[in-house]
Image (cartoon, rainbow, N blue to C red; front, side):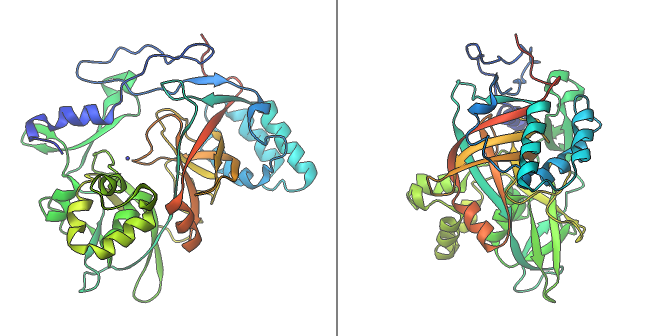
Amino acid sequence: MMFEANKKRLAWGLSLLLAACAAPPKPPVIPPPQITAPPSVVAPPIAPFSVSKWEMLPDWQTLDLAPSWPAFLQSCRVLKNKPNWNEVCARAEQLGVEQLGAGDRVALRAFYEAWFTPYQVFNPDGSEQGMITGYYEPLLKGSRSKTTRFRYPLYVAPEDLLQIDLGEAYPQLKDLRLRGRLQGKRVVPYYSRAEIDSGTASLKGRELFWVDNAVELFFLQIQGSGRIELPDSSLVKIGYAEQNGYPYVSIGKKLIEMGELKLEEASMQGIKAWAEQHEGKLGALLAQNPSYVFFRELPNGLSAPLGALGVPLTNEYSLAVDARTIPLGAPVFLATTYPNDNAPLNRLMLAQDTGGAIRGAVRADFFWGFGAQAAVQAGKMKQQGRMWVLFPKGGEPMVN
């Protein structure tokens, strides 16, 4: 989730950030609405949906829905005041936080079937399969001060980083934003990772923490949140604050293209092992991904990292999606398999987060939680999967 010259960088950034709408699929898939994009701006993709039936969701009739219920209630904290969600969330609160018995499972299934309509998600080319990856909350060793050991900085958002809301000028581009900086009277793209790491960007005094491992810091930026263990053994929580505006580029793919790793070796663990053996090449490799994430310190009382929806994530029941296509907060039924396994992983989850690498309709990132086991599962997860969005009745996609 490089530019040739400053003069061309903003226009190119637009084309990289905003993907073109594909031709609408054949009925019964609902085509995206026609959008007339302004000059030099390409309209964002809109996922085509097809109305489905509950029996089409694998294991729906036997699935235990209780574990996802707390995550659903978290979504309602944000959605309850929005149209078509008021009554749904009010009824959910009446059912309570815990619905655990066999009878309660029946009640939860009846709740979803009474209040929602399932729509399968399709890619612009009409295919139903997409990539499902995993992420987690990492733990890093760090300090509030730079030392010989702790020399890699985490920055807070820079003061000169601009956020340009395209929706204010072009309503059809609602929720799309560009990042940049002023250069004289011109707005140009913000500094890339290579420029930030080389010191081109003046970020002195914006350091939040210092950590002891450049690769761990890189993966922290990919995960978007984590914890830092300070020298006195205390833990602090950090979360995503901003991003420099560049698209994410996979260094795993770069290592495969370079012949450094085989496809089956390009997991998070495989990349870390390569980095330990090729420290001299690491800086050049990391620079291949120009995207850079800035952080903020979070209250230690949070139960979990905050997702893009603004609520704490739920281990193994929160999903990061492309919010241009999947509405944040909505229940999403995921049909995939366990990491490096053919065992089915069919689960009702909640779309509560986004990510720089999560681009596309049938595309999601599965949140595994915190700890060593979560890291293992997230690092090796790269499965094919299908997705259904549960739309509240009255708020379904428009049918032509």
